[in-house]
Image 1 (cartoon, rainbow over the protein chains, first blue to last red):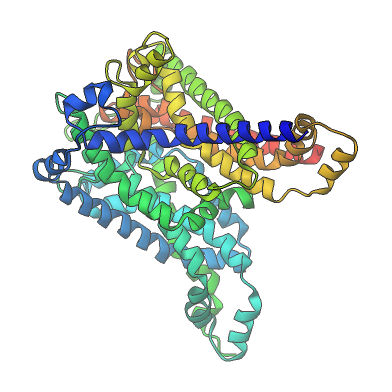
Image 2: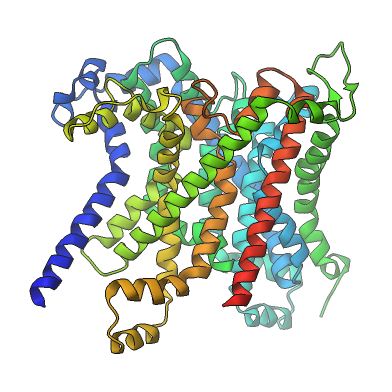
Length: 272
Length: 293
């Protein structure tokens, strides 16, 4: 009996190890290749043990002006997250407190509709307004992902807050607006952090809207990395270096805020 | 209590900006897309849109490429969905125990789904590279002959499905693990008394109890897999030989490469209808199952 249990533990541990290796492998591969020369990538003998070079990173920043793309991505991600918070927090609060289920449903539909359905009209309208290749059009389009998400997460967060605190505030002479700004928002930190981080990541990763609406001035990282690939011959080392640069901030956020992100991604599921 | 006009109308004032945004950026574009689907226009400023009635719809529905795209969209969606659900549940059950480094494993699991899809697409492009990629190195190690992966018309779909499975199986696992943590212990004690095996406990106790959680996870994934764009466009752009072209990619190609805005809009209207219909179907199935259990 005891032996059987030990065998079971060994099998379970090996399977777990296999799962971890399979899911981590592409990241390890990306990281290793980003420090290799083209010749080292070509040779399977130098898979793990090789003489690392930083040349790929130097090339990416010197030849392709990656700093500009990083700044563009950051402006758009921060802008769209901020905009979504400003519009989303009051809306989520009102939906939660006044039980405006119909509106909540509309927000959910926004998550279902294929984003590409909006792209043609946006492209036509933004072109006519001269807004293609502007931060404004990128921020507005990225808010379409961020806003529904923030409202969705914050509705369940606000619903979970005890109403007694707000009632006490009202009795003490606060107006409902003051209750929201001075009592509800300060204690909503965890919810706001979760939803903002994910909204930031969604925007940072967005490719479909940016590839149409961004131009030379406002090109974001995913578009830059994609264009980088389409240049004649593929320089794998530099390509992997650029993939590392674009992924790193997201991975750092994910590692630091792991707990928040799991609950944020599962928010839709738990609520059902 | 002091109340002014602003506070009395709180719920409308608070929701108004978000509602306006949704109307302007969502409802209006959808109606606009619907309208252009009855026109022929290539965004030229000299030739205005020309009303063609249902011509775009007729042309699209008799276009063989469109039907191939529909078929491929369904193959990709259901292929990826089935594999990641089965694998996701299995991994969740595997990880649902205390062991050294559990938090680290959960962190690693989070990475594929938050990492930038375009970048991950490029990494997989290198993995699938026939001469230097890791995929063929692995095949050679276990004594199989190297394959063309995404460069082969017949293997491109399974290869893309594998990428999506890698990215999103963790999401199903994490949701199911959250579900496992809330399961009651009594049914397991009863099963132990009845002398059930580990497999029987999984099949007759765990799975039925998890059904609502799994259905929600599948529903969330279904909506997103149907709309997959980034990893396909970044790696194959629908090729080779259009063998990985899904509705999303074809719509994009029609609109932004051929500039057939009317035809592209027609396709998007149909795509929109398919996504909505499948979502409503899932909601209906979920309701039925809830009533049945």
